Every structure is written in C-alpha cells, then in structure tokens.
Image 1 (cartoon, one colour):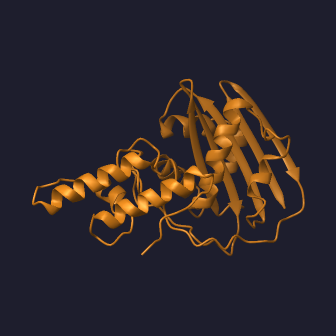
Image 2 (image 1 turned 135 degrees about the vertical axis):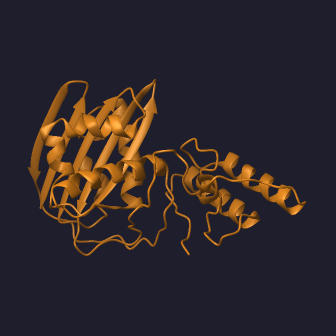
Length: 254
C-alpha cells in the first residue's frame, strides 16, 4: 500500500513517501451528507475534479467520514504543522478504521479562507499536485480550521475501488459555507441553527411569509423531506448534542 505525504506552509515544502501494510477493515457507517465545513469541502472538490478532468482522470468522491477526520487533522496541524500527530503517531492513524489500498495527505497553512487560494497553493507544488492528480485515489476528505487569523487546510486521499457507505458526488457549490444543518452559514452546526429552524417554523405556522435562498433551504431541510419544520430542528439538536460529546454523527438521508 502506498501513502503519500505533502505539506506546505508559506514557501516551505516537505514531501515524503512511506510504504506500510494495508488495513483490511472497511467502515460500514451508514451516513448522509452533513459535516463541519461541508461548503468548503464541496467547493474545493469541484475545483479538484475540474483539474482531474483536464487530464482525463475520473473524479474523486467526497467521503463525509474522511472529512470529519480531515477536520480533526486541521485542528492538530494548527498546533504542530506536521504529518505526525500530537501523540507522535503517523497522520494515517486517524484513518486506521477505514479500509483503503492507497492513502495520502496534503496539509497547508495560509491566511485566506478562499478554497481557490488554498488549492492554488497546493497545485503550484509538485508533491501536492501529484497527490491531487493521482490515478490511485478514488475518494477524498477535506478539512479546514481557523486559528489566530490563519487557515489550516487538510486533504486526506483514499484509494478504494469498492467504495464506501456515505460517499457522494457534490452538486455545484460555490464555496459559501451553507451545508446541511448550518443554517446561519458560520461553518458549524449548533444550537443557534436549531433556534433559527424553530423560529422560522413558528413564523410559518402563524401564516407569516419566510423566504429562504436555495442554499438556506438546503441547510434547513436536514431530513430532505421537502418541508422545513420542527423535525428538522430536532435533527439539528440531536446532531449538535452528539457532536458535543466528541462523536461525529450525520443526518439520516432520504
């Protein structure tokens, strides 16, 4: 099994290659599309797949579980910018319960929240570009974390021809942070989002007109039943409660 590492910070580049045994166990988590920084991940993948299409490579699919792992890694590299984790283990230990034949990691730090800027930074570095344009990968997880005005980005690449539960190909996303449950578009799903859903539902119930943009409607209708009501608010609160305990739940898909 091949694993590729690439990191970039300012103009400093580090690339390494490690070969170690494969993991055989495949995650059987049945999940839907909802995770922190979903908007950024979907927007970046759209740009990545445009680059892959130029050289006739198949598109990568987004794996929510891998995105959650990438978000954890983004927090970790904000304290120690390295492919080693704070406990000294390899970055790949974070995906040890996910089956794959090939894996890679790109990390970066810059002062822009723009997905275009982050991807351009990677594409201008040979080692990172090789990961992004590798034929060995089929899936990706993308994470982002902001600390003291700096943005820390992580891409986790996976190769698995059998696929994963929960994988999906995003529809067009222009990078705005609205995602399932993130009604206020601040990049996190929390009690404030549930409050917005309940407030709007109460207003609708009394005959008031509540207007949503398409992105806000997508964010609010977390159970994907076409209606925005107390059920959606309940789903958001359950998600927030579980996430607060260190779990990484997902909304059930329709």
